[in-house]
Image (spheres, helix red, strand yellow):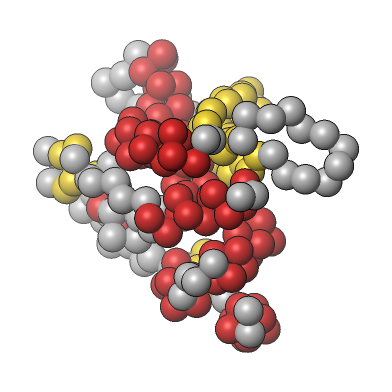
Length: 185
């Protein structure tokens, strides 16, 4: 089984409960730890591993890049065979966050980045997650993001393995051409 087939299997079967409660916003959410815990049965079954790499890519203002990697555990080679798949999240560090010490500010950005890098990797739809939609008392408009090239490639694999185009349309804004291309797979 290829790494893409293994990833597709995880993406289509993955379930992670929103077991954490935000008492300020009055909503449940899932954390990076919850996502990682939910992946453990797949790791052994499919003989894959998940790693997370964090990198400070800007200092002024501080911005972190968090990369989640699903790997077969084999060395990368020049053969063109993918041995791993990655997804990235970019997060800023809020230096003005009241009530937090500097390490806590970086830790909060780190946790947020891990959650979203893992969410991108495993196609976790957080559109119903209050953490993604909470306006914190402010009026807010939510719009769908246009699908990126990397996400479109993953969406194609998802559809080829039996996934529904409507599931992708519910998460991403597709052009007519992209929607037609996915429908013909």
